[in-house]
Amino acid sequence: MFFKSILYAAFVVVASTSALVAETIIDDVGRSVEVDLPIKRAVIFNRYSVEFARAIGAIDQVVGTGASTFRDPDYWPQFTQDNVVGQGQNDLNYEAIIAKNPDLVILPRNGVYEEAARQLEPFGIPVMVITAWDTLKHVENVELMSRLFGHEEQAARLVNYYTGYHKLLADRLQGVPAVPVYLEEKRPLVTVTQGSGWHDMIAAGGGANVFGDIVIENEAAARGNPNAFTIDPEEIVQRAPAMIVKLEPGSYTAIPEDQFANT
Amino acid sequence: MRSISEQGAAISSTATPDGALAARYMAWGQRRGAMVAMSLVLLIVAAAAVTVQGINETTMGTLALVIVQQASFGQLDLITDEQSARILLYLRLPRVVMAIVAGAALSVSGVLMQAITRNPLVSPYTIGVSSAAGFGASIAIMFGVGLQSAGIYFVPLSAFGFALLCAVCVFSLAWWRGMGAQAMILTGIALMYLFSAMTAAVQFVATEEQLARVVHWTFGSLNGVQWDAVGLCAAVLMVVLPVMQGKAWQLNALTMAGDDVAQSLGMNVRRLRGTVTLLSVVAAASVISFVGVIGFVGLIGPHLARMIIGGDHRFLLPFSAICGAAMLLAADTIGRLAFSPTVFPVGIVVAFVGVPVFLHLIISRKRETFA
Image (cartoon, each protein chain N blue to C red):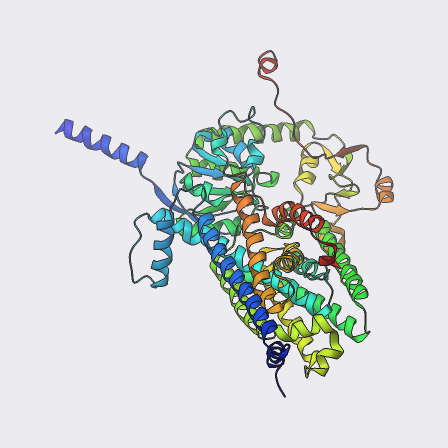
């Protein structure tokens, strides 16, 4: 009898750990997406999201990504050319995605998620929008991905690491006057205002965005949006920034392995 | 009064007493007709051949079964390989059929615009229709938030509206002011720049996600095509092509002899121009509004067809449709397979492939082809 109970308990444990649970999740753009959790096989476009998957220990569950993510193979030793299923978040190869038989495809909100959802619907592959580059949603995104992939513990460590440094910065900067910062986007004379992730990063780092007082709703639509707000060069001089940050396109190359080992 | 076609037939049969010229003319027509029919068969075979090519291995047999099963409205259950069948039905076939329909519609539109303006430089792209559609799509993407009731058709509808508006502007100005061919092209180019600038302005103030969608749209792509778009564009083509085919003799008279001669033959030139303008713009705009800006086919398709089959619109119209379809099918197949799994937008590939071919033809052909 005792042996039977043990066997039954073991069966329940195995069944509960291997069983998939269907859940409805509201994604970044407010769509309801039904997925079976945990995700065993995912296709992820956009390197920020793939980075999150790696950071929470779910990279082995990523079976496909875009060529624009894979462009630096040294940085992504987990992938081979066989994992490439399209150019990037706007040019997906649907046949290649289907061939990977994923449980879920993840795209950022500046990807072609509507098209992907329509094209993959007949194949029963759900598409979810997670915008990992949105710094304001960092914690929310990491927690969502941990839920999707079933890596809550590692995700919690990542969130603690992130929020820990946030708190440390906030503590150390208490009483320190904020440094006025002008941040210029990749295009000249285009900056950011309240509502942009860059604006929040400046604030978190102890700075004060010199264009942070702009309320976008009160401005002419032609001047842009919180992430790209057009300015007159005289306005920069008038607002007297103590520091200028300029964004440039491109990405850093990976540190060579031997150099990394000696660091 | 005899119709233009009757007059043409009468002329051809009474040109020489012994009817030798008429016989030669008939034979010439039959050869051209056979050429069109053969090209159509070749296009269908080529389309079937490229449809079975892709990441998922499939066969002509599976393709045939999918087509037969769909043609039977699901009454027959023939499919054994469900996954291949779904890929063919939902991904490859809509794409291949749309390449054929879009290429044909753009090319026919080019032929018609060139015919009524008697100008070989006119095409949906050079009179600004494509740029206008691009602008229409851009503002729909930019300001379409909250207009969910219009659904997925909001962007194509806006693109279509602006394309139509641009064409009406160009043609109305041309006829109202009695513009020559060159002035008309210049008007079209001016509008093309205006709409391009306005699209750039929209891109300048767009958010990251809006910008990505606008840029993606302006590339021109068949990657996200579905059957509803294919059906709409095909329906437009099925109306435009037969109607215009019925007016082929009138188009011949207009292009070969000009307005005065056409009028003296009993044609209502004004009405013909109006009908042709409307149908050519609708054909081009309907395609552009769904697949984005594909600029080159409307210009090169008609020229390619004219070089091979001549300027008789009875054969030029269907043959230019086949040429345009073949060009776009080839470009999309290259974009889909050459660098797989990366998929290149067809709008980029068509320029890369089409321009060298076109230049080769220009250089290797006689001067009078473009005179």
